[in-house]
Length: 179
Image (tube, rainbow, N blue to C red; front, top):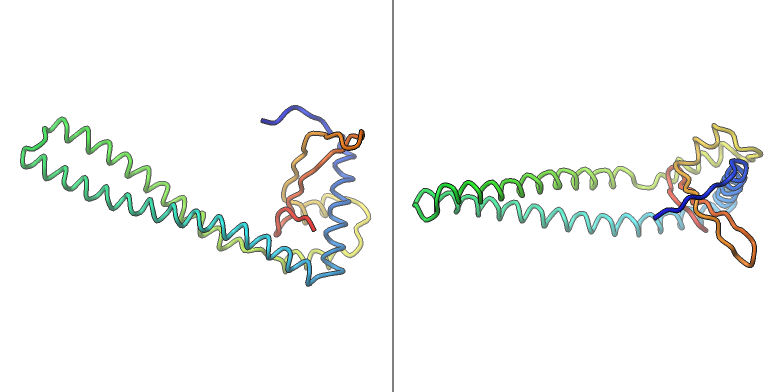
């Protein structure tokens, strides 16, 4: 649950400029280390997500196949008079609803898996941006669009008696980055 909080735009701009300067400095001065850190973070996040999505996809496909068999047996039981037409209609409607829901989720999971493969970290693009902007003196709308995907403003915290404002910056191509 997010509480209401405020921050001046000048503070956001200062923190964004500081964050962009830090990350571009690291990427420029220690490129190999930067690439290794980003790849490690990206691989860990995507591997976990991919495993979970693949497992859920396999389970959904298995359940869909089982539902096909259940519906087939239900139909045969109805034909042979073992269950009434009313009971058949209720049960088959329930199973078919579940199957449609699962099929929609399967389509969604396949899209997520395809997107995850397409969104492999594009470090080269980020490094090209770093080379393009060698010395960022001010935060312009162009710099902001090139480097920043999203910014989350978190509630002010007191640390050692001082108020500290924290931003979470998601960079284009690499997501959140902390050295």
